[in-house]
Amino acid sequence: MTKWTGVGRILLVNSAIILLSACIGIGLNRAFVAGPQESVYSYSNEGGKPQFKPFEASDAPPVPEMVWLQDVRKIIDSKSMIPVDGRSEPDYENGHLPGAFSLSVAAFDKRFQEFSNRYPKDGAYLIYCSSGQCGLSRQLASLLQQKGYHKLKIYLAGYNDLFLAGNPVEKGKGSLIK
Amino acid sequence: MSDSLSHKRLPIQLICLVRFALGFVFLYASVGKILDPKAFAENLIAYRIFSSAQFLKYVAVTLPWIEWFCGILLVLGVFVRSVSALTTVLLFVFLAGMSSALWRGLEIHCGCFGSPQETIGGVSLLRDGFFFLMSLVVLVSPVDPYSLQTFLGNRRTHLADSPN
Image (tube, rainbow over all chains, first blue to last red; front, top):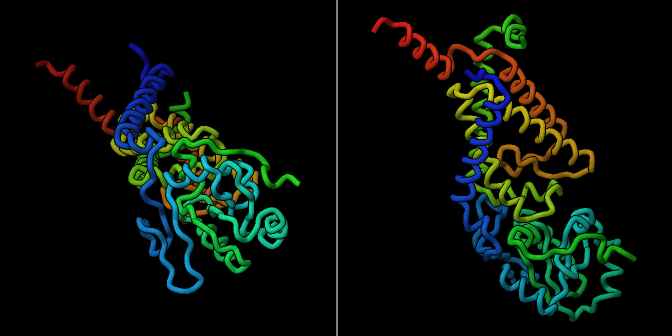
């Protein structure tokens, strides 16, 4: 009789656990795994609850329009807006929206000069960060509004949403190359 | 041999307690991730280990259920040796992932218990290191008599030995 502690028995039991877990996990989350799918929600830290509707602000300046995955795909395909990435530069290098400019909120003062040299104030810009939790997209939009950029839209669900939906992203230094 | 050595060093009640505690830790860790796999997937993205979104999503929906099965089997005391081997490997992988993130200077959410609030750091490493040691203790120790597998084994032996 095979000894209970045998390596073969351990491998067999663990393979069964992993296989069963995969079947249950994938089976219960088919819509999430199947991707690309339409994102219908995002998360916010506001009140510690999921934020199902675009963020509303009460004070001026007006909050830019929120856009969702389907619109973002069209914007990327048509190149009708310039994506602007508010995350840190290492995050940008790890992956960003195609054609995005890295304008990290943390390095805004350092990077804004280059941004303003390249892009006019009357251009249209799509602001994003990693997800609805990060809040950097709203901060960046506010900073750009103060500098006179008003044609802004915010992709609240951000890079993570686009990446998880299986859409192509760009990697590398991109706009950080001088 | 390892069985007899650890048996001499650790009281059987302590081994049982460690098994229970480790099982509950895995159960607790799995629940938040099972309920919100997308948030867990976003935590995994931040580690910058996965280049394939599809593979990442498979990991995000499968790993919490592996943790759940490990937790429930450890608490019940079924397949203890096999499950503790798996938890030891899992905890080693978690430690390696967190160490790698810290080494690269990433300030990211741990994602350890499905909570987005905890940022990885020395405390997370120490805690997971402690869980890793607990898992090793269960792995090298004899299966304690309070486990379901011992109970069922004894019952089978008793039935086989009885005259009827």
